[in-house]
Length: 162
Image (cartoon, rainbow, N blue to C red; front, side, top):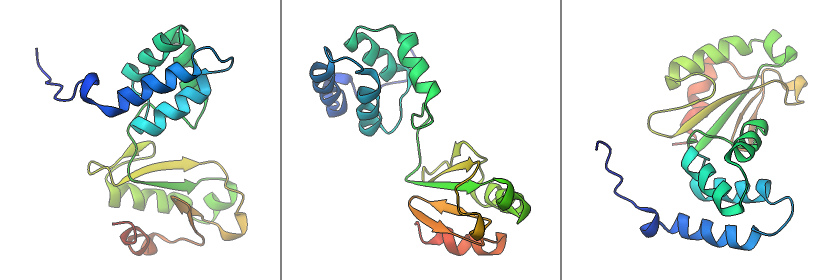
């Protein structure tokens, strides 16, 4: 038996809302991506169970849904934290010390790129270039951009997102 699922689909309003979305989009062409966006807004991510449900609800193969989820970087199959930290590792940022910031973030957060802290406070991501090379190294938390970041300044930045 094992894991008790205390919330069932019938009692979880997210699944009821997903049923409404599927009914609205079922017969529209190009429906997979918009439905997945809405499903990710509801659940915060797209676990296998949600992907299978969307596929069945739209009458498409699960492989098609999975292919879309894994192809587009906007979709995630892992739960995300309340705040997303994105560190630029493009050439200018790397040359200006982004690796030291990555190491400091890994130490302070206890997670590496692509992971979420145990308390679900932060998801840590690495980007290739953010187009703000003059501010290198660049760190973005949610929509807030921080330039010329140093490992010593990280704690002060992170404190703003309690």
